[in-house]
Image (cartoon, rainbow, N blue to C red; front, side, top):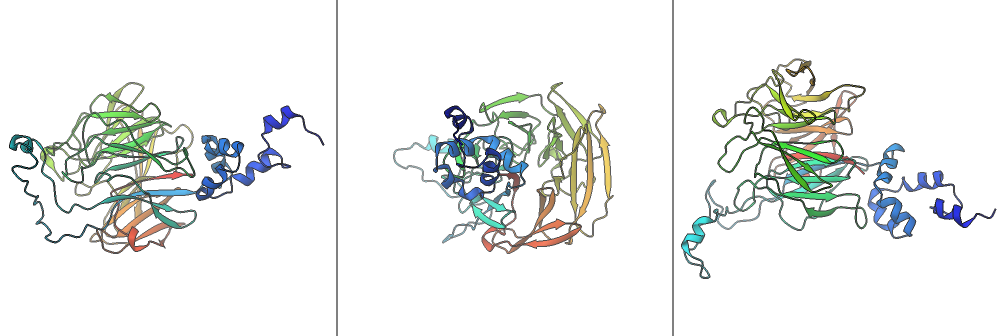
Length: 409
């Protein structure tokens, strides 16, 4: 049957001779790693696969791949004379005409700091790889994903040479550009340098940060929000309390929760409360008695569980506890405005309190990296149906991560 030119143009004939729906079903089945190749087949395929709606179609058909992005320390560089902990290299008093006064203004450089990299575990294909990044990423940077935008961000942390907090923002676009994505760019820096802060994506384009500490190890109250599409930071009102080593979560894609942390004078004594930012009222409210472990950081011990349904306004979290620690199985707490709720459910790890762990979530399931740390051997485990099982973890990917995020592609 002859088809008019207008109909051909409207359908774009994704695959000649096949209805558009069937052609789409074929294309969404192509693994993400081959999107580079199929983009070069024809203009209509390039246009389709480069559009963010294609990623949504892959999810609708159940063909999207689930990726876990981990900020991990790599093997430390070899040193002829390794420094004592805290020792820094001495600087020449006169070098290439530089004055002594100029040298004093520069922060000292630390010898032999570890390199950090971004590792990706493809849970759908059970494969690992490391993303090539053209420059050294900050130590202890926060990793956060924006699913609808198809982007993973690395924010803040420490300069790898001076160990000072930075304002850096790196944006990795999985869906744009040539091939299967992974195009890096530097985003606009934060207004304040910070590390060990709360961070979470809220909605489709925004990332909130709050707390952490500055270059003097002072706990911060300040907070700001980044619009990834506009590449702009905006300051929001500060929290009521300074919170270092706090943890951030999205409140049903409506608000931003900053969990626990500690103040400047109470280092290591983790607060039991949380603060929630409401973008509509542009204000913070407090949730009391939500974190019951004063000796335990919520970082690597809490993670968002499956997405909340209906009109629930808050976040549902997993609280990962060691097998010997006593804790309630589940607790619910509301904020002082009675608007937001945190629901915490205990997940018991198959380890004792002496084991190093970092736990989180992936595709609605609990995951945990157990052991690891530096060059030591570690392993990842995944909980499915109430049972923990080991995930194949190559030795080059076995160190405990500092932060993580997950994204479907």
